[in-house]
Length: 377
Image (cartoon, rainbow, N blue to C red; front, side, top):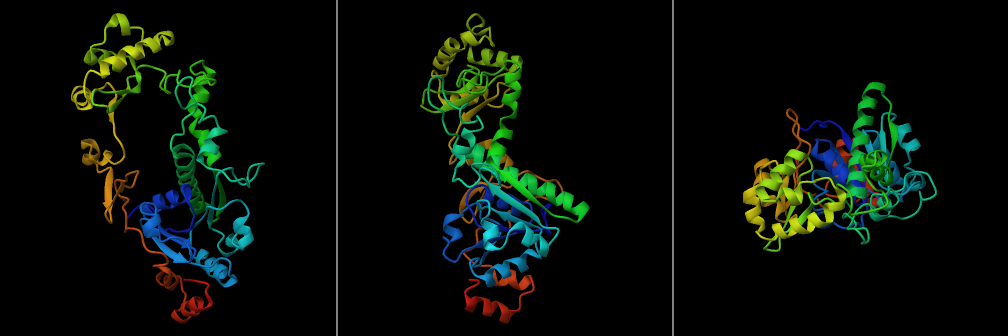
């Protein structure tokens, strides 16, 4: 049983960060009930990973009876995850005020891109937009080239889903003490800004040039912190920042002190990068792994996400698991006494409607009537 065993989370169906947050809470043992539309795609086809461990209930939230059904469910819940734009839940009649009248201890967690207020609050957006206005996107890419989107990891997932989980856990702790719930405003723009904290600090001490990319310590500007192509067309990643790690890199790669001795002279970085790139082209990825992997060089082969589960370190730690034939990341973080686990694979659309409502006090005839009215499915 995970650390959140006994907690109930209602997740209004959305995409991206909110489903990720619900997945993490389910992995930690919470009962996560995903509220779907009857016209939604089957989660078994669409939510092959983030739907794991969740129950699927179909409600018609445009029907007053469907709304009342949800509000009765809220009375039995600890958390509601709202993935909609600001004001949508209020228009549906399931906003925070209404829900918390039914359950004063409810944590109402709102996940948006731009936040609940401000000039962009009601505008559409995606990860690339949220990281653009926080300086994160500007900082990523090669010198003299355009910014490169880091998939949707920084805004949606790190700045969104994980921020949402962080807020939910904190609010649940506080509610346990006060007996009162509260509204969480988790915005991806806020989360992306928080992820840039280190570079704000670097800039104040002259350790980062915010007006450039591909010229700084951690953006590929340094010859000792970058990726390099090998003789077989594969790549390796080097992160030898500390002097003792850099010294070991020079020793194992055969880099001369004359050419590579002045590690932190930024004026020499471009020339040293060309020379070290030529060195790494002299061996295959596997050969460099044999020489460097497991040492203090700070080395790793660059793997695609299909190959990553086969790496010996990932296998030894069980970083990946297989659920219903789908290889996916294992639950994290890890708990010594109440380990997280994937309770089950993805359930089909509305598969749990009858069971969930029955467990929440709805009678068999009542459930049948709700089906006949179209309020549930």
